[in-house]
Amino acid sequence: MNKLSRYIIIAAATLIVGFLTWYFRSILVYIVVSAVIAMIGRPVVRKITGIKIRNFSIPSWVAAVITLVMIFGIIFSLSLIISPFISQLGSQISGLTTEGLSGKEVLNQINQFIIKIFPTLTPDFRIESILIDKMKEVATVGNVSGVISSVAGVFMDLFVAVFSICFISFFFLSKEGTFTNIIAAILPDKYEENIRRASTSITSLLSRYFVGILCESIGVATINLIGLLLIAKMEPSFAILLACISGILNVIPYVGPFIGHITAVLSSLLVYTASGFGGSLLMFAGVVLAIFLFTQLVDNYLFQPLIYSSSVKAHPLEIFIVILMGGHIGGMVGMLIAIPSYTVIRVIAGEFLPHLKIVQQITKSINKE
Image (cartoon, rainbow, N blue to C red; front, side, top):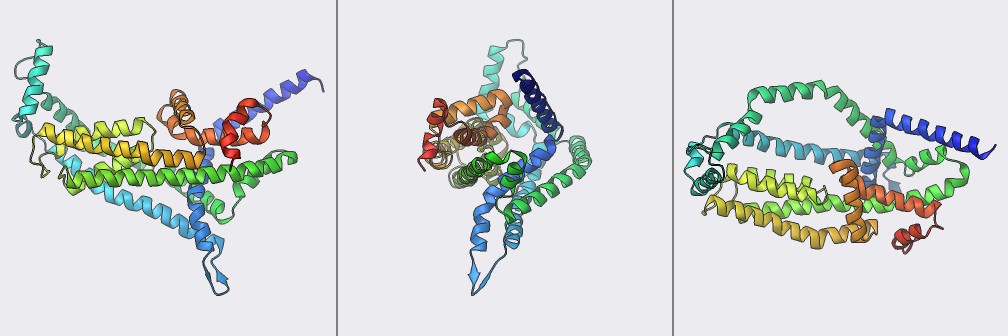
């Protein structure tokens, strides 16, 4: 077989694989999500199977079921906790009136400032009226009904997705190495040893990374919650909601915390009257922002260095550049998967292309383990 024929076969095979990947992308997403859940739950499974009562040890399939119940139970519990607060916030938005806000000195100053910048505006212009109207549009019964209809329309797809992820995750958790065996069965036998070494390294690095991210989100949410309750004197329901949102958004590198800060400051307009804070609205918003900024500093200088340095074994500059590239390619989703994807690429390159100088450079921290 000449080189041209070989290149044609390789190109055709690449196109076929690419098409199949795109066509079955939803299934691949299920597999990837299940693999992530398995990485997070693997330490729990090991702990459970390590428990021995005399000569009896818990089977791996039982440990897998317990772990899945724990993971999805936590997710479901968080949903139940947050949902009433979101409904309460929506009710408060629907009941907002400009009379309750227009007398605020800070808002009057803002309105006068905007009128000076745009002389065409009438003297009775009120920025709070515009904000309240827009928020009411989101919280109207019609929009809520539309959302409910949309949710009902995709309920079956959601059920299939959850069932598929649970089913696949069960086998990944109950039998360690299942995902590796699937990959090894696809590729030639001569690469099997490299695949298994790479899989072990990837699983170890990403398990620590995802567990670290989970702990980071919980830590950020906890610090914000304490600050909002004790310093800002915010009502517990709103404090819990904002803290949970900040923890979830913090998963998105760099951009997520910034969005959380904006959300917190804007929410100050809604929750100020329900708080026990004694200062002005501007001071209240400043205190809320200061709490979030303090938490961000703790995250940047304590949580993130521990997670990135001890999990993915990459230099902070590498991480920053990789996240920027991920954001440029795929937006927020790209930023979310940038570090795990880079970790997988580094490990695979180290196994199959160890002779390249650039590969030696980016994998030297992994090889030191």
